[in-house]
Amino acid sequence: MTPEAARHLEKARQCLANARISPGVNLSNDAGRGAYLAVFHSAQAFIFERAGKFARTHQGVQHEFHRLARDEPRMDKTFPSFLSQAYT
Image (tube, rainbow, N blue to C red; front, side):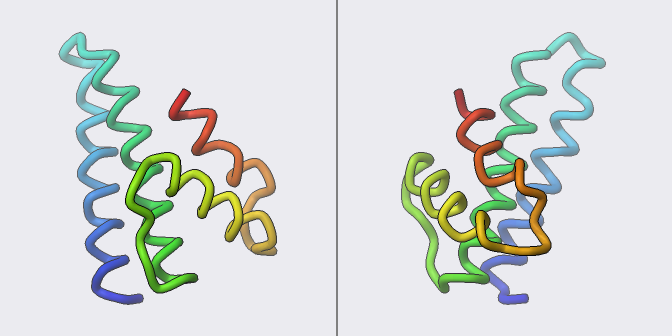
């Protein structure tokens, strides 16, 4: 794994940890945002590992993740569209 991808996965872990704490302190909106950002940073790591670049916008990440993940045999077939749905 590249250092760039590893940094994005670490950020994803931090976002997920924050999302797990948020409902316990009545921050449900923050929980949803944190969960989305965990998926977003995980997608960025995947994109970098496959394409050697990062997308610059949320829409770019959604598009590039969908493009790269849809043909990945180890990827659950619902994942490519999940990022876009989670953003909405």
